[in-house]
Amino acid sequence: MAAAQGPGGPGRTPRRPIPAEGQHPPVPGRVPATRSGRTPGRIGGRVEETSAGGLILDRPATDARAVLIGRHDRRGRLLWSLPKGHLEAGETQEDAAIREVAEETGIRGRVVGRLGSIDFWFTADGRRVHKTVHHFLLIAEGGELSDEDVEVAAVAWVPLGQAAAQLAYATERELLARVPNVLADTA
Image (cartoon, rainbow, N blue to C red; front, side, top):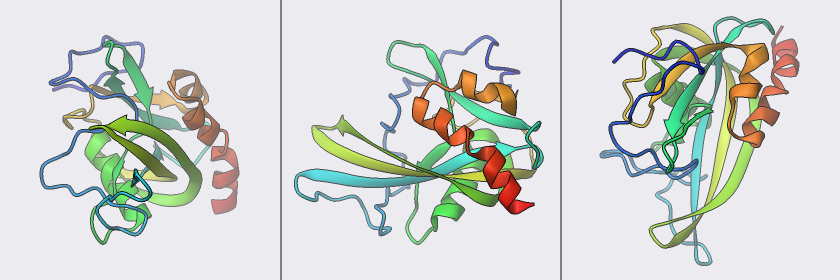
């Protein structure tokens, strides 16, 4: 399947409905992990989940291009966001971010800094879930843009200066505002 050329390009019908932000269906063979790396469990009537992901740039510059992913919400709208997913057993946040970005975009990268964490609540399978997502800034080292991941409807390279306007979630737009400082700290 070919990747979308830009966020304004035509969307595709997903292979299956894509859940709302933070509500990822179970993936066979993948065990979601908590902050401690254990399978999620109830803590005071809630479930704790931890994910990692981030923003990958084609080069370490403020005029670089960034990769965004598109997922369909329950109403069928294509919403653009940063790639992310659950930590696997024994995996560090950084390793999970590298793996998830590559799985969801086709682009392999290396972590150059931390953008921050977002946490939110949602209900799934009759349970209250508290999810924390740790985001990193990555620089591309190879690969080819791809939307082959079943959770992704489209992927696109977007000029970094336009990426915030494309993102559906305010919390992710706030993370993008930190990119110049993270890049300056790595120089």
